[in-house]
Length: 261
Image 1 (cartoon, one colour):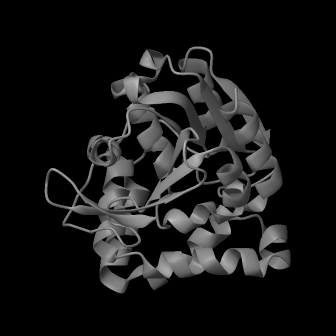
Image 2 (spheres, one colour):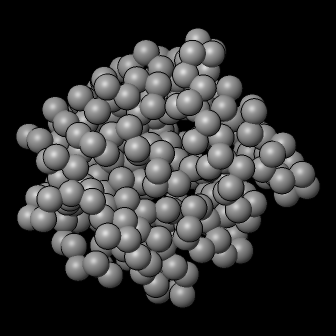
């Protein structure tokens, strides 16, 4: 089942629901520059156990891309608005990169909507602002094609890029298809975010997944979150940024082990 919901500000979010009726809900949130299909490697296993709700975050995929800048607060409220519109009270949640930033916001500001929280290849802050300003300017001037190759190099290790072109091709296509306005507005949200002070408020059971070879959100960022979130658990994978693709089997196993408790 797939459809749209209209948010309080009039924007529309595209969503999809897959899995057995009556199973627990699992909400997945995508990274910057992708869409809900980034979770494709996990879907066969996850839909055996959960009713999986995916959505294209604001500015991405088939969702609306209104003028920015956006904020993590706005993106977090989008997720709450989606649940409200669908009449879903509580979910398990997993988000990667920007999606994990949304997860941190939910854990601190809407904990009653979560039973489990998984923060994957993400960070609580992404200073300094200058690289983000430069990226925003470049994409506005030259389009998404100007950054795709560099992004793919950060997101996957060189051996994986060499040996798994079929796994990378859909991600490259997602990057090219992301609206310039949506991408740059979300870059501003990531640039301006600092959630470190709110992490100790998270009391939902939390798992942090980090990639040992991730240059986008280095493993030290994962350890920082674990140190700040009470009782958080940690899994390290031998991967770069999109660990759910580069180490799909190990990533899915870690998710299931935590979420099925």
